[in-house]
Amino acid sequence: MERYQIIIRKKQIIYYTVAVVFFAFIAYALSLNSPNTSINYPHTFRIERGETLSAISQRLRDEQLITSRSFFNIQALVRGQSNSLKSGVYIFKTAPSTTQIISRFAEASYGIETVQVTFPEGSTREEIAKIASGSLPSFDVNAFLLETREGYLFPDTYRFFETASAQDVRMELEEVFVEKIESIDRDIALSGRTKEEIVTMASIIEKEANTPESRRIVSDILWRRIDIGMLLQVDATFVYSIGKGTFDLTVDDLETDAPYNTYVRLGLPPTPISNPGFDAIEASLRPNETNYLYFLTGADGVMYYAETFEGHKENRRKYLN
Image 1 (cartoon, rainbow, N blue to C red):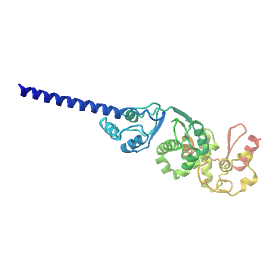
Image 2 (image 1 turned 180 degrees about the vertical axis):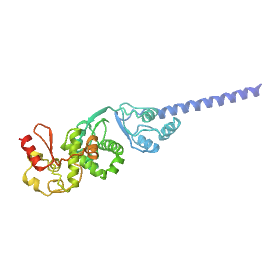
Image 3 (image 1 turned 120 degrees about the horizontal axis):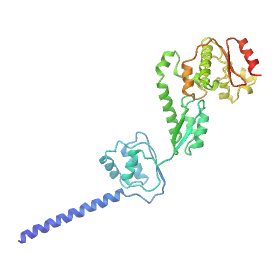
Image 4 (image 1 turned 60 degrees about the vertical axis):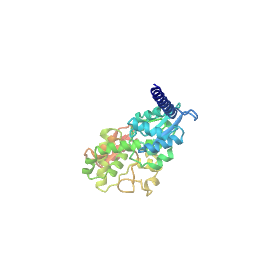
């Protein structure tokens, strides 16, 4: 009997010990998962594209959002979310638990309001930067201008997170541009023109014409001029280079030998002069064949064309006075 009582007591001790260890482990795990309320909220945390689980957990620990890197990594692995943490900027308005952080990262639950921003077709980089800086508090104009090229930012209406940086905006506009161009890459290759030539011409067309039909006619006129060795003589390049429009130009402006002066230099300017929309790009690629060599926009806003310089002078007399 005594022997059985000893065995029972040993079993009780073992069960008790296991229970204590189990509950101690649960308490420890809960403590590791507990929100850290000792730092200030709201707190912003950014996951970079391609950042590893280890790097993310290290920065979370450094910023005191979690108490244990190991617990974070194990939880992400157990949940099958270690490779599902989405890049971007997250805002934690109140203290989150470790598992809540993992869930937010996996679901791309940024906790951030979005802002709608519209960049008109034909906007320059400077104009895009000005619009973005007026809507996005974290947008750095100088960083954006340093990292972008004129002509290769697609103008459209976008939704950005309110915390979007200059890099976020740049990458989005460049990625959409690439997507649009890829749809006509084959046609560009068959056109005999380079992508850079098509985009540069489109940037001029965007500034010189304002309807689908007029864009395609102006495209034909300007390409025809290039092909026969005739000066483009467009005023839009002056607006881009010196800030002067048609009615502000002087004889000296027209005669100055400068890279963007298409009155004295043959061919296209060295870079695009705006960021064209898709219709202008298509117009550059697919002009409407005509016999015109001249065009102007009348005082009534309508475009008029001529085959000869005499006809062009007559249009100027009729529609610009």
